[in-house]
Length: 258
Image (cartoon, rainbow, N blue to C red):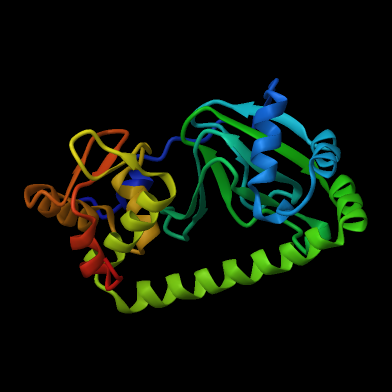
């Protein structure tokens, strides 16, 4: 019998529960800390941040819930206060293409004020997620009262476009190992914590299909590379975590500086 050619991610795909945000009493100190560390609001004083906070709604989602869905009308911006989520697009063959992993302080979503008619990705909670949400009218008021926020929106958009171009170049020219090494290093820098056994621990429930989407590869190719690296002691991995044991070696593979 010929092997099943259906992509692994498509065979295992379980339909998302519809967006089912629940009101969540996120403590004010946590909200203020997250707002103060968000580049878009950098430099604003406490009174200004408190004013922005009052215009935002605190909500929570369970693991597996969709915070918003690709193609739906872009009606809100979200700011992660706690938890982890993934943003992905669905390819014509049904494979999920993960474009970003999100954690505390990350801003995502879309608004017509920012020129977005529909959400470009689906964002799914990888863990329980608490996020602050703001609508179009309230954000337009913030832009009018705090012009510096508008300038940072432009800066962030420029940075995202530059990153997207770099990712496209890497995926079109690099090997699977090079692309995977670059992704793991980026995740270690963003989410990593010191591991007891040495190296950096990334506590994210990432599947091989997720990593394949982020690297423009296939789950089978990612599994082969990961298995070789585990045997060589470069990484270790479990169902909900990945440990980078030898970041210098990965940096050499990725073509980055150690």
